[in-house]
Image 1 (cartoon, rainbow, N blue to C red):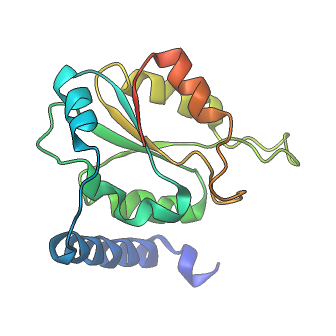
Image 2: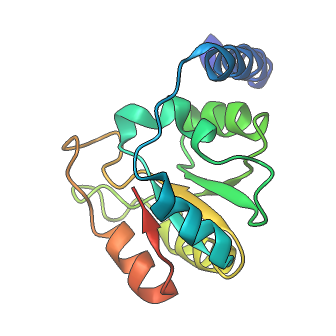
Length: 160
């Protein structure tokens, strides 16, 4: 077993990452653009898709104040790296919906995408779901088919 895949090591690293994220949230000087659009969506209640490019997910929890009426969750892959991220983000108050789309070259290997879609749609009935539309395999900043499908099926507004 590789040391970084050890559950104890992952939990310790997730705690460290969560503390680092809290430090960043408290010390970064934030500039909010087009906040009125987000406020309108938040005031309506109900579900909302919050979208972040994969390269920007580290500070994404800071964009969703925990005092909002809608509960928020994050869509995170079932991989070992995803487990680490899920633990760190859960410490920020965002539990995970786990799963991702299958690699197009390895369609026989399930990644939990179907269950994640169902769980995500259930979450969107009353709350927010954070999602990265480009994923770690890329191409970077190019949207895959999951986000438009989820938006269409749920009817939820999308905040980028």
